[in-house]
Image 1 (cartoon, rainbow, N blue to C red):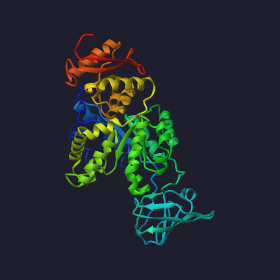
Image 2 (image 1 turned 120 degrees about the vertical axis):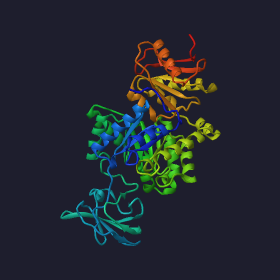
Image 3 (image 1 turned 90 degrees about the horizontal axis):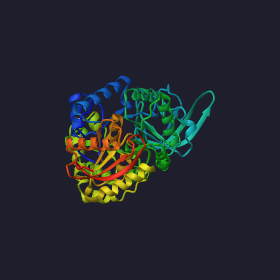
Image 4 (image 1 turned 60 degrees about the vertical axis):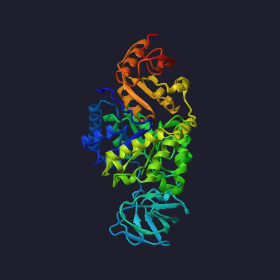
Length: 484
């Protein structure tokens, strides 16, 4: 059971990817103590037993620290790769590489197989094809179909180099016919939901239909958790508003995005994606190589420090560490550095100005009440105390970026865990009560005991006249510890 020792480190949340560098429970506990709010499990490097073990370890570490933690299951998605190549192909600009639509074709000379035989039906002459994370690439010069043999795609190489086995293939701007959910994804999803993950990240999203499909698969399993759509293809950027109509959040997945689009466009796309998330009142995670050099070094570069700071100023809800905490030499130091950068930025005048520019779309009665409460809380940066069953009102208040802290009080442990991803929200577990007066009394006493508010301090309370899901309709300014 949680003993309510919340993480009050920063308002911008920190996501850490689990891996060999962070599996041991003492290190995991240190990561959580250093400021991790969300633990990410990367299914590209996890089997079912590994998912189960990691979730159990994360929950044990959080329980020992007496605090909630969100767990994000990141599905691998349909990664397209070259086939087996015993000896790397050496390609020069101007060479023609033929991709054979067969998983079994053994690469040699100027021919290579692929794990995606449908590629010939998706591309047309003139389309760009990239290999090995953009290290090699060229343009489709011909597509050949023959009923007797596998189809072939000719690519005139613009960027040469060595091409080996199972290297990634990217098709920028191409609508791929491959489903975004593979058989592995569906199996991983079932295990993740079974062991209680809080969020699921969907890779290589091309449009809203992909998110709807994931929701449908969850419904078949009888459990639905929020979906984070990973934006890593140009088509997804073009369709960001439609995607955000159905997804609960997005991830600026700068790794594959930086391969699929010209790398100089990534900073502009990042800002556009974060702004879109705010317009829709959705969550946003900014990811990939944020403190990349800390995989090897105890301190980041100046450019990396500035990158993290700018993501925070852009308005992201969370910043993510990947290899830094999964396989790096300095996982705890990387989290501490993110925490330090966040504190510095959040205390600056630039942060206050950038926050005032955000104009989220808040939904329904909960949104109306949340916005009113945020305005009321602006004076003297009053703490905002929200009693919530579903977490929705707390998320909407978070999007309005109040100046004071947000304390989300809930009897629902799953909701407390999920709220660890919402900007500025400190989730606190309280017992179930039956009247609004009881709710306020129990919540106020809990916050006073934890030292989160002070006796005599003005707080803004959001609650429902009936303490149940979807009933947030009461706002009041209250003097903590005073009789009403």
